[in-house]
Image 1 (spheres, one colour):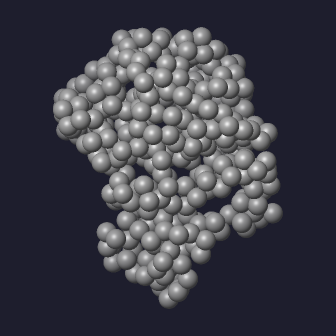
Image 2 (cartoon, one colour):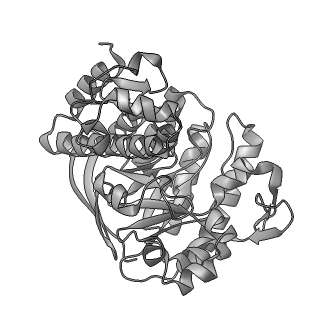
Length: 370
């Protein structure tokens, strides 16, 4: 396996590392900007890079549906096609098994999707197909195809899920083509059952992957349950492989997960919030539709260096109220900038051995509570 992870230092459970890929190295803990359809919505790739983002995420299901793996491969892969020249991770399509459940039929062989675009054409995706499409996309990190369950879920259903995820993980690993600077991650499932999380982790580590994701969280369970499942899982994963918490999340979720040994994150939250007039700041979130910002001359966040923070809250409010596209662009870039500043500060705190104090101080400012 040719994806290289270097664990540089630790501070309690928090880890500081680096992942080397064929398209560059990214520092961990890392937040991946979500570029589902080969685009981070509302931004050019140069704008994404300006935020400090080092790695982005694409989605196999959506890119399979359009424009198709064959076309992306013909265009030279996702890097050339999208203009993003850094590392790329692609989700396998397993999340869409849950999010598009009314359009899905599960079988042992794979999953049948009815097109969410026109509701007619059916597509059958096996673990081998998902890995092949990700190879066509030329993503640096391939994810094994799994099935994500919504919580809460009955134990009997979760037991069947864990066993099938292991079988699909083996098939995905067998289908993956090893090459320099590329790797494949397995995905630990088990819902909110600690013993099933342990079982899934052992099954996947026995197969052997370049990295391990903790999946099936932030899908309906309380935050304390999510943290308990992370704390249950991470000690069972190899310390010399990166650990990825899928689809998480808020700044407070990220801090709690880093504390429990997670290295990589992705979430649509900062970009989706930017398109719906919400700004993340060091003192919490702000709804820029709110009339109190109409004549507010202050920047969104006086510690932020993004283009939006060179302007006033009043101007951002004006753009939002007028439904100007620039408002969504500025807020999206600002939110990603905020997230990347947070990740940089987390990395620095781990290096300096004061992550616990940093976490405490950040939460106090962000929530306004001691």
